[in-house]
Length: 479
Image (cartoon, rainbow, N blue to C red; front, side, top):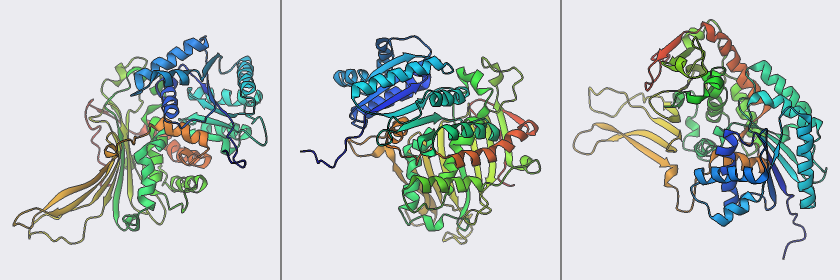
């Protein structure tokens, strides 16, 4: 018997702009299917794809089916067919008023079939150049408005990068803020949805083991690294106008830094957590022309200029290293190193916390004292948290040797699974949980730090480096 006080959530319609693009077909559709087969989508839902190509419902369902089969570990035919029955498609271009009128007709039709007002989630899986036009067209067509004051919500999910510098980010925010309320806006950085990165909050604030040491008195330095073996490949036209710093520095690495350095939000509350992340980013020490030479390294891998659609005289960086400081009581004087590059020697994303060396050492006379504890958060691949510590070697001597205490996310109990980052993004977007989405203040603070660096780039040497190497060997550690 159903409790009469319980209210069934309204049906949800998920509209994907750019439904035939790489992001939608490789990531979003498989993620939605995984949510569906694991029981995490609303009981009543519809997925509407919109793109410029003229597909029928059946043709687009075939595209979705092939994508799911190719990228999803397991799927039962009956569950897959049931999921596909929830998908429809409408042709349209992102700057055409009639396309939005047509889309509105599709969503109105679905609401009539549901027999009630629906929740509406709009996912912009399109290049950033289309954002402003889509925002304005959604508002002009009244698609941005909930269909009822009592039930149903309207939310918009926007992929990074959000702007190219401070001014363009502020312009987008002004448009977005004039059309949508902050609680409707979900700015996506899918790195925030990665399991190991989320667990930094729990690791820090749900245990007393490390938080008392999480400050300038005990930590020597922090290194945040995002390296890739692959080069730019077929993304030459896009990448050459963006560069590594805009691609992953302004978003992924700064958000990782904010998770590591933020203050305790006290509660698992989106507003509190996003406020604390923003405060960290607002406290980053600005880079200027006097300090740039000591704080910045940028590089370009050999062969980059031969990439299709890349300018033969390109000065775009494929690697950067930034040394920065957080000017607050907790972190004053502790250097944070942000590093990322393509065509490097390994694929890894990780954060290393280097604790200060002990002032004394219980080790044999004459032994070099270099013992240091290192805490590592491996975000990908092989997600894990590990601690390097020192212990006595077995035997009669008093020599020390390094040991590792680690927790691997791959050793999870049978029946459990690591959710894909896009599953988490979509799940939280539907649930309305903004913890893992960047706020207006965070985006603004990140660009306030990054934009002066971009302006200094042309006067910063561009170091060549061999593919498969560790990048330019320019040491900032002594500065």
